[in-house]
Length: 412
Image 1: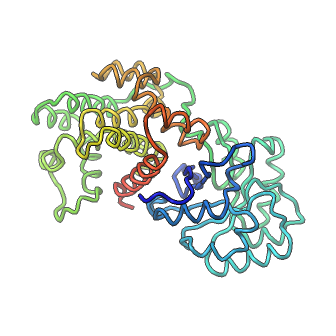
Image 2 (image 1 turned 180 degrees about the vertical axis):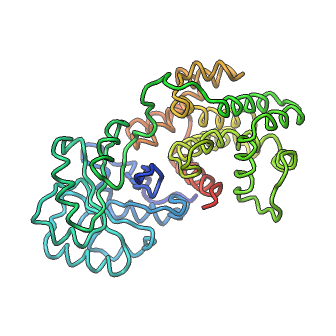
Image 3 (image 1 turned 30 degrees about the vertical axis):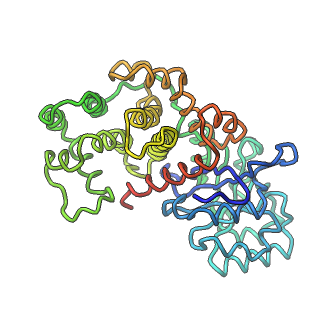
């Protein structure tokens, strides 16, 4: 990727519907050189940061066919620069300090006419905005700032208008449940990666089979042993065939038998699909599960960063270990079982175990980097970059490649 004249951080936060499936992402850009003090909020990223960011990568790669929510301040809202965005895929978020006057209302109507979707960010509900509620598509309510007790009245008021209501900063499953019952349509926040109560659920049979398979693949078991594990677990076989056939591998023929699938993929790929199948497994959301999204991007990002650092094109043991660490780091949430218990069932190296349990060692630092990036904590990312010996350009390149790779494994 060519260096742009202005270096920036890129963040991507998932937005989910009532089925907890991803429908889009809020994209956040922050100039890297800015002093944080003068830079009140990275949602105010200058038009030049946003346009240089967009010019330096295809937005399709970042969105994988989903909607992109982009913050706009008044200057950007009124400018023609917006036309560089993919109109059908873009939701323009009007920042909360834009005065919703007649000029803004008129501009919103124009943008709607062109085909953009519009959202009001961190909005404070009032009946005086009824006219704009009839133009915009989504109203975002920051539930922490607004306070839970004030929400029912706001939802009731907005229900009289055609907008969809989005709950922002939903950090716990309990908050999600309350907002869901109130009738919110969309949700943003990291509630889905927080286990409700650890140790509530024992790993089920297919999860155990999947871990056993992962163990076999990590230890280079024979084809017969691997096939036997599949035969003992029909649901595992179904998931494997479903994933193999959905992979963008340019294969003309559908894969019908297990042995064929195993041979076609080879053990290295099979190890990947097993890791991803853990998340796509028993969940009705399948490939739109936000945990699968996060695990896949996390693993791939770490793998690419290790490859860049080692200057290797092919996969070596270190980049494989990085991919595995990223994927496994979310199993605790998936199985609602403590990480130490999951690790006891897998024969992992000390490097991987220490990274997963204590965020120690080079893999631990890289995992922390990936986690901080997910929650767009850019201030924490900066020192981690030097600790991981990664440049900002390398990080951006790796992010884009990880998003793109993730999009390629979904047959929408």
